Amino acid sequence: MIQNALVPILGFSAPSGTGKTTLLTQLIPLLKQQKLRVGLIKHSHHNFQIDKPGKDSFRLREAGATPVMLVSSHRRAIITEFAEAKEPNLDEQLQYFDQPELDLILVEGFKRETFPKIELHRPSLGHDLLHPNDESIIAIASDQPLSLEKELPCLDLNDIPSIAQFVSQFMNYA
Image 1 (cartoon, rainbow, N blue to C red):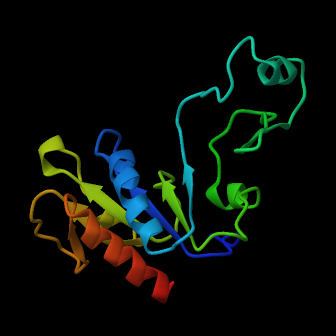
Image 2: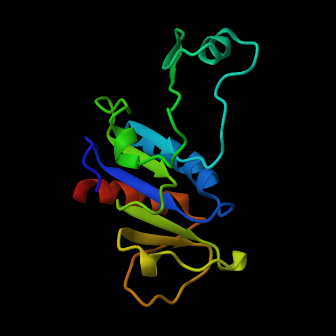
């Protein structure tokens, strides 16, 4: 259960390679045109590095400092090492997410957690639909018409303006 979201939160779930990031990079500018302040949390299954070997922040973190905050006149990044490697929990991460200046938080991934999500589906990839096993899916965006067992809004994955409209409507009900 998500308790630490101070604003509406909406996820986009699909197997890797379906186009979640591509969709979000097209959707976010449309939401910003509507004067929405949008934040994003992306779940990664990889051991990513946000800074680079040789850089001061990397060296300081490698020396044992955690968290490390890197700040400039343009942006801020906080790098925190976890004591033990484990799958992150979305609600826990929301405690550290700066929300007061936001209208909406979009989430890429965290598909096993319970919060409102739009499922992205491309039948040509051969993956099963997620919605039969996930009650928190509120709509499906597909690049082909679907026949669903459960009545859900079906969005055209290639019609980003209509997805933006759906997200705006969702915010009024969240």
